[in-house]
Image 1 (cartoon, one colour):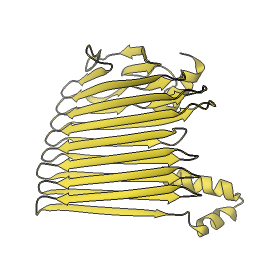
Image 2: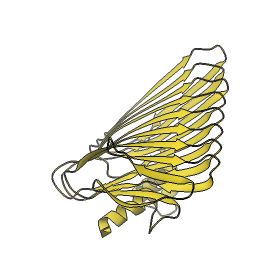
Image 3: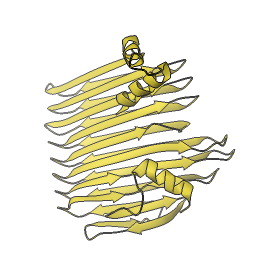
Image 4: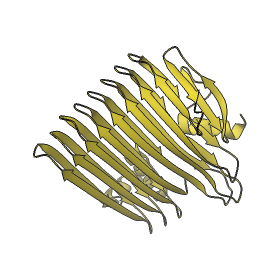
Amino acid sequence: MDEIQRTLLEEVADLHGVPAGAYNIRANGQMAGRQNTANIEIVTKGDQSGIEIRIKEGTKHESVHIPVVLSQSGLKEMVYNDFYIGAGADVTIVAGCGIHNSGDAASEHDGIHRFFVGKNARVRYVEKHYGAGDGRGARILNPTTEVTMEEGSYLEMESVQIKGVDSTVRSTVANLAAGASIVIKERLLTHGSQRADSTIEVNLNGADASANVLSRSVAREESSQKFISIINGNSRCAGHTECDAIIMDQAKIQAVPELTANDPDAALIHEAAIGKIAGEQLIKLMTLGLTEEEAEAQIINGFLK
């Protein structure tokens, strides 16, 4: 891999070399490296572009990295990745995509990730998106995530996009069985004329299923964002969704909550707040010697952590 691709890997997967455990690295539409372990197997799909990741029952404290990097201007691709997490497993999955575009043509990576989380399994899934390059071509990322969770399983999803992506349409749908729990944390920053649309839908189908959906975002300059959060309580369950956003300059933000209780014992809550950076926060930091620009950066960084 060249230096640009290595830099992208550091940004989206915190990789500074070959990762421990299982991994599959994709660069400019081709496999750039792969390693399996005794408990985690990665295989190439035969009928479409993408991979299957199979994690054995009872696998504990292992990880798998599946980053994608694009450094070729004008490249567009769609991948289909399926994750099968065995019952009782406890694993971390690190994905993410980085695009470096120094040309005039748009570069685009679209992906459909399907998760099948076994009974009583625990999964932490981290997905980071990053764009760079001085070309006029757009950097486009459209991730779709479909989740099926069996009884007693737990999934924590962390989705981060903080730089350089011109357009993104993000879609997540999760279906939970009895006692399953999902936590979704989304952090997003847009600037310039960037556009970001995110829709998260959780269906709490089994008794005592629960969901906590948290979105934090910052929109600067002329960028725009739309966040749609849908929780359907189809049984005795608990669901909470929260959207906090900072709006700056001439940006636009839209938050659309939708809660549906189809059972009298469904407890569903939504919270949302969109506003400017508080003036007293800026003043406090500026009295410590920071410029207004430096103070804004400190506040934004802290907000998106």
